[in-house]
Image (cartoon, rainbow, N blue to C red; front, side, top):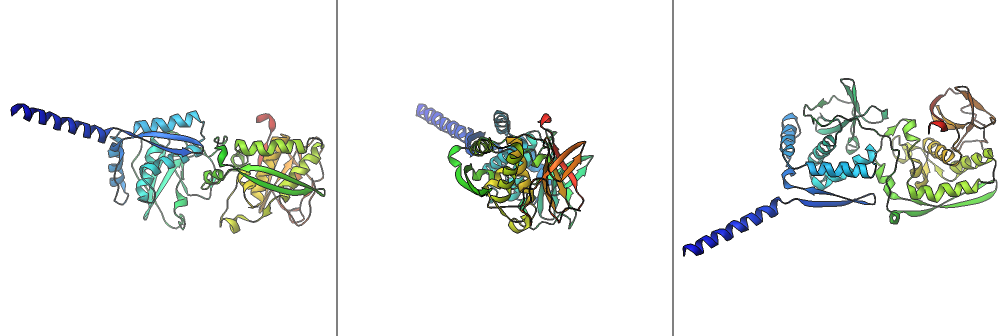
Length: 401
């Protein structure tokens, strides 16, 4: 009887150990990230509830609890993936957002989701902060770059830019003051950059074909290009950045390969000025014009690939696309000419054409990529802008590429 009792006790202990092990053994969570599978080990020790309103006490408690958990493997997975695929900070932040969504779904508890983003980005080495404005929990990251149309504040000589303002559609950040929370993440030391200099390799099967048609000197041209809707998602909440950053956002590999080599072949037999004229009129006439306020309800600068994808675009979008096409096809020096209500591009040829702008000892010929009341040729400026003041918003020199 005693032996049977011992056996039963051992069996019970074994079952308890197995059950305990099954509960604590980490599991892998995987999701698709722009054509690549990202996976990370998940341990229940980082499943931290958050049901209270955010303040210094509740956020500090959340941080202390999750900081005691086994979060390090997730951070290692994030940083290894970032390094392997050479993700720029903005693209890496999209990975952090998707990871936080797996851990704490946004629709279930927005504040908890925001805290996981804050924790993951901070533990990944970025200087992050949280702030409160009434009931809104604002998520900030240190960035030294010029970023427009979103809230920012300066503390200790450091600029912090809001990453989640898009989640508050009617938020008026000039209306009332906010207070920053005192909870800090020691590992957060790096500044965040909005520059996107490399696109992820997107899945080929996600691309769709699009026909772009226009006429040049009474001859019709038709281009069948590949575009990927994932690019729209990638830049959905991308803020308005300075022109140096904005003009240098590249195209994804498939879109580039479906357009740039074809354009190079099309202008191959043309003289340089005629080829640039072709690219100017392609950008001007192959897309319908509409202002950002009418499309998006606010200022929104689209990358060259987004402009190819969208039916409508404005002068900012076309200036960026034309700049990109001239750079990739001819790689000529250029300047972005910013008027009070318009932006256009001027190109440096061997010999200036028509209206030219002197800048830093060089002469640049105006090339208008946006529809105007007059059918402007190379070197012409519209009557409305002829006597308006302007500034040079960006200069591109091929030798510094």
